[in-house]
Image 1 (cartoon, rainbow, N blue to C red):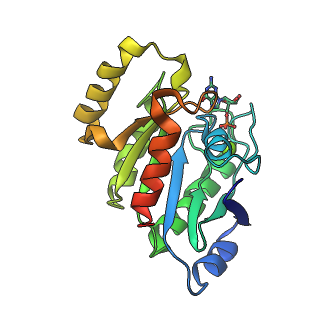
Image 2: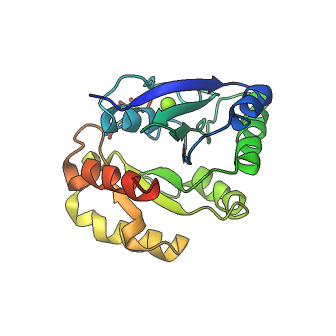
Length: 199
Ligand SMILES: Nc1nc2c(ncn2[C@@H]2O[C@H](COP(=O)(O)OP(=O)(O)O)[C@@H](O)[C@H]2O)c(=O)[nH]1
Ligand SMILES: [Mg+2]
């Protein structure tokens, strides 16, 4: 059984303001990643649901989705970045929405930054590095599509990310939505959720 529900989908600042003004909310955990990285698939496979729309067309979802998790905490699905064929207007809207949310929410407890394990820290990920630094979030790296990796590639990937991001190994998690048990991914992420939200 799934223990999340999609509570709000925000396409504009007004909607975000209304969400952030709600009383009695718990913590929020935003999920960020390049479009097509596998964010929706991760949400669905992690919580045994089909709530998140999976799509082959990058840059489609330009909304912030608030999934209520375990009574009053929230998993926050941020719109994907790095879309090549998207008009400037859409990109500007991404910055506006994500900026507003990250700057104004007082309940963000950590960040899950999703990167494709087969193409990590690519140009668009790197472009986000400086941007994210200003928010000083407790960041975890989730490496998606890990089913496409050779096991022998894993140590180098972990070392690269440790070196380039200054993030410790225990904050880097390999995950496959196709085979969630692989690398103990699903179990590790559920354990992490409990830790992050102090459940
Ligand atoms: N092989 C593999 N493909 C995946 C995985 N997760 C997502 N995909 C595929 O990647 C594409 C984008 O997935 P989606 O979850 O919609 O990405 P989002 O844009 O980040 O929400 C879809 O075609 C998925 O089937 C994974 O763990 N392994
Ligand atoms: Mg998605």
